[in-house]
Structures are given as structure tokens and as C-alpha cells.
Image 1 (cartoon, one colour):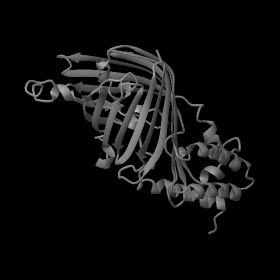
Image 2 (cartoon, one colour):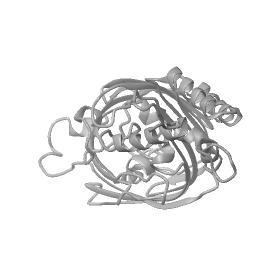
Image 3 (cartoon, one colour):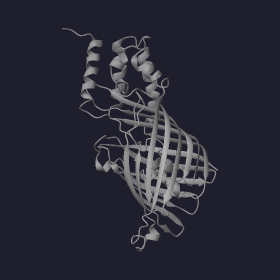
Image 4 (cartoon, one colour):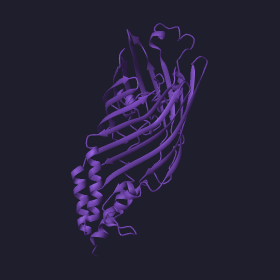
Length: 388
């Protein structure tokens, strides 16, 4: 029995789906799933137990809104978060779709995809752009409008060859509230994030194989080309909710210990993406439970913070990939310095706060392994915000 090239490649693609049952997806969820802040990434992506911050509290622990002392209005907050080759790869993906569409035969289309995979084998690339059009936060309340676009590409050595792509384009109007009991012995908070998501369908559309370049849609276009064109034609809605708790640990006996007033300890607990919200055929969010502990000792005029988080405790991952540690020191001028360890990799960052204009920068690594520690993907992140 003889097979045509198209029949053989379709069979290989079907076999790939069977193999995926034995191998986990190559792109893991990053937390928080919305509103990852450069300040936190620079200090090891900690934030569960830190004193509340106007920027990060709604996304890392809404109970922290109870710590705020004054209100702040921010607008047109731009964040970019990229890995080494992500900018160039965006152009390569566009060229790939065009080259596949222009290829005259199935063999030519197959060759185009094979060369693309060979050139990128072993790479993991990440691109994120976030625009917070506005947000307002004050004690016990925050609200804003956020647009977040993420693209991840994973090129792993597989037989048959393929690469995995995940894009998530979210538009969210969020609102958060907090309250305290017994003089901050217990602080509670909740963030609601109704979200519209634009994305490739979860599953086969995210696994690009030879079948996607030789198969055609009803218009005669390669499946790969039509999948990319349809990303922003379908809207998927999901209601995302986060719950947070914090405590200043001011219990009798502990509060009177030497150093308590100096260290100002805080304990935090979050349950994020409650219920693992789904977005129809688009990828959903896996719920996450995290705990954290932080102290805030001031030295001279330096306002400092030291934090430890264990994130995603409920998820089946290596314990090291759940560990986060961070340091922050705010100088008495316009500069804040940060350092940390996230998932076993070092991170660092800084902020220049010029009152109306604020610039945050960070260098960090993200673990690309799903269940085990395999490889840290180095990334640069920066935020430009305007404050009133």
C-alpha cells in the first residue's frame, strides 16, 4: 500500500496528538495571569504579603488595598515584557504564514515549515504588551481598564516535528475592594476581572504541524493562515475572581516580641483565578493558591522590604519553581532598587519615580518546564506610567 505525501503527513499529525497524551503541554501558565507588574518581577515576582501598592495590589493580593494611605490616578501605563528573540520572531511568524500561502505545492509548504522549525529548535520565546488605559486606587478600593496581549512560542524536539504557539489577548475591566478587622489583624480583599479573550482555540490550533500547512480551509487557504486570521474574530468571555487575605500578626505575645515594631511582619494568602475560569474554546486559567511572608525594616532613610512567596501551591510542579524571594530598598530620592530569586533564577530591577512620570525596569527569568525545573527563559520588562 502506498501513501501520498499529504496522507502521510496527516497520519503523522494524528500520531502527534496521540503522543501529546504522554507529554505535557510545553507552555505553562504564568502568575498572576493578568497584571504581572515589573516592580514585582524585579524582586522575584513576590507580592502576596508585601505592604499594599497602588499598582500591584489588585493583582497580587487585593487585601493589600487596605494598606494604602492616599489615592492615585494612573493613565496610559505601558508595559513591555520580552525574551531575547521575541521581537524578531514576531516578524518571522508573519513571514512564515505568507511563505506557506505563497508555496505552490504541498512539498514546498512542508519544506517552509520544516526549515522554520529547524532554525528555532530548542528555543522558547515570549512577548507581552500591556496597556492599562486608566486605573484609580485608594484605601480599600481600586478599578481600571486593562488590555493585555501575550504570545509564547515553544520549539521542542518532537517526532513528528511541530512547534507550539499560545496567544492570549485580554481586555478586562477590573474592580477590587478590601476591608480590615481587629486593627489589621485580618485584612480581606477581592478582585473581580470580567475579561474578553481573543485567542487561538485550545488544543490542535496551538500545535502547528505539517497538517496545518498542507490542509486547506473552505476558501482554499492553508489551515495555518486561516487560524492566524481568525484570532481576533472570536470573542470569549470569562469572569475571573481573586481572593486575598493578609495579617499583621499582631496577636498577644507575638506583638510584644523584641523587633516586632522594627520588622513590621506581614503574612498573606491568595486564591487566584477561583474556579479555574474557562473561555470557551480559548485557553482557560488554572486556579492558584499562594502564601507569602514579608518584613519591612527601615534603616536610616531607606524603606526596605524582604519577601518570600510560595506560589501555585496547588499545582503539580517542582517545589523550586514555586519559590520566590525578593528584596527592595527605596532610597530617599527618586530611586528604588530591587533584587530577588524566582524559581531558582536571579532577578533584579529599579524604579525612577519622577512624581508624574514613573519608569520601572526589571531583568528576570521564567521557568519553561511544566512539572520540573528545566530551563530559565531570560526576559526584560519595562513600564512607563503617568500618575496624578
